[in-house]
Image (cartoon, rainbow over all chains, first blue to last red; front, side, top):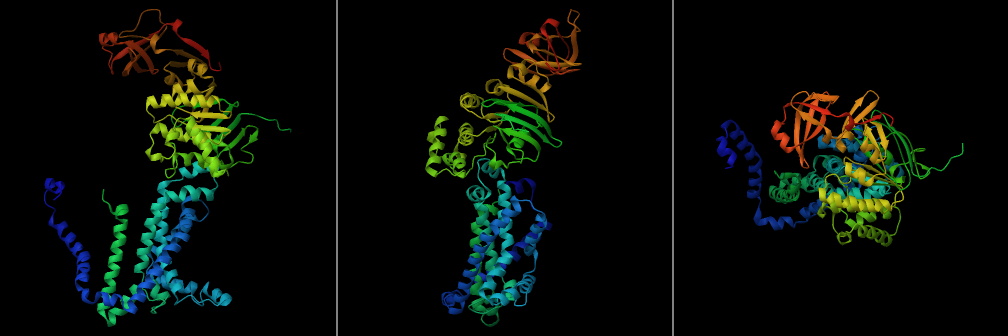
Amino acid sequence: MTPGSVRLGRPPVVLLVPALVGSALLVVPLVSLVLDTPWAGFWGQLTSSAVLEALRLTLVASLSTVGLCIVLGTPLAWLLSRTSFPGRALLRALVLVPLVLPPVVAGVALITALGRTGLVGHLLYQWWGITIPYTTTAVVISHTFVALPFYVLSVEGSLGSVGDQFDTVAASLGADRWTTFRRVTLPLVVPGIVAGAALAWARSLGEFGATITFAGNYPGTTQTMPSKIYTALQDDPGVARTLSMILLVASIGVLVGLRSRWLSTS
Amino acid sequence: MAEHIVSGLRATISVRGRLEAELTAEPGETAAVIGPNGAGKSTLLAALAGLVACTASVTVSGRSWSDPPRPVRQRDVGLVFQDQRLFPHLSALDNVAFGPRARGVARGEAERRARAWLDRFGIADLEARRPGTLSGGQAQRVALSRALVLDPALLLLDEPFGGLDVGVATTLRIELARHLRAFAGVTVLVTHDAIDVLTLADRVVVLDAGRVVQTGTPLEVAARPRSEHVARLVGLNVLREGTRFVAFSPTVVTVSLREPDGSARRRWPGVIAHAAPHGESVRLLVNGEHDLLADVTLASTVELGLVPGRDVWLSVKESAVDTYAEGA
């Protein structure tokens, strides 16, 4: 018991009961997943070719997503935080839409943009014969679509808290904006980049709705772990639980990694 | 019209609603800018550095910085802030070498120049340290080195000793005075401290509510202040009488409990607002028609019961006041 509860008396039942029900709702499924995982055949299932295939694809897709987020998202966050141009507020709002967009809608939107008859997709097909949907590229694009806003938000927050005072000093010392970005701004927002990358990675690991809509569910090319779990649940629940266990461990890994930054209560 | 070469600093700056000021200084001179909070001192520095939008005519060493407006990067300025703003991820040496590197000097040469400045400020042994591990005085020496290593045409110091311990500030002030004597460019120093003005400045510009209310040498301004702010800064009482000012020291003010019946023509009733030790005497702040300072001995403080809230009369002899015209 904390000293506060000793001084102020017992927590009232009307608050205690909903709090306990809420905790149970969050904790019980995790516990039951651990209990229900077929640990005996765990290693065998983990190393089965279908599982390894999905695992490999998930790793490739999530790491590519993180890479794309860093390469595209860092300049985007910089643009939103360090420059002023007409429509900046609008762009910022649009960048954040995928945060609240239902993933299936994201998938449909990606088809309308990059599908073979889509706004950009039909040009890609006409000019270079490139088709994006139902390829691993489509997986990475849909993951980036949903993960990028998390990354941008994190880095933009970091840029905001560092402020532009050091940019001003660098400019007064003769540095142009690229030098300033490279030597001053970027090193100072590394914590935001790391946190953003972890968030983007976690978001990518779990991506299902947009991926299955835009990229489909083909083993070896577009079937990532969540898609594999969804398929396996219908014919082999044991495999589904094993894969779920792996994703749970990975998610907790991200949480532990971020703990010191965001979850400390002090 | 043939352009004639102007050396030093000639600036006329207008920031809408905040500042209308003129500032001139000869090469090698230090101009101190003083004034109450919100008078526009920092805005003036920011405008000279090109950091705020303003209508300005700024000429430094014969080159116009305002026509067309030069971005801060192309102004030859050194900026030093009260909070230093050292790059936290770079060592002291890399902080100082940053400017030369950004201007295209090779790494080895940039570091050699940086090291020379750290050495001049006596902190060469700290070159590998990060700013977070330096004391306030050490960090300010690094910041001064970082600004001076580029040998700027215009050195802008924004309260460089603010926030330092008194002893540290005193030592650093003496060091800076030595470097400024050897500095060929113009220095503009924003400060709150009369000692800075008297030890470092060749001329003083007093700002109040965005306008210049007085300019002159430090001794002129200290002896005949034309604003309440400077009067307080130098510890003088200054009254405006029509177009003239009357100045007198707190030490010549007589404090009594009843209206004085002597020859003193200048006498004011008031209430003691504040009393604090000042050297060997006690300095009273008395609120009345004017807010005035009066120094009394500790003995009379006790004898007369001079505590805050007490009604008193202040008077000064005519022979003890200095009267001067507005424009003098």
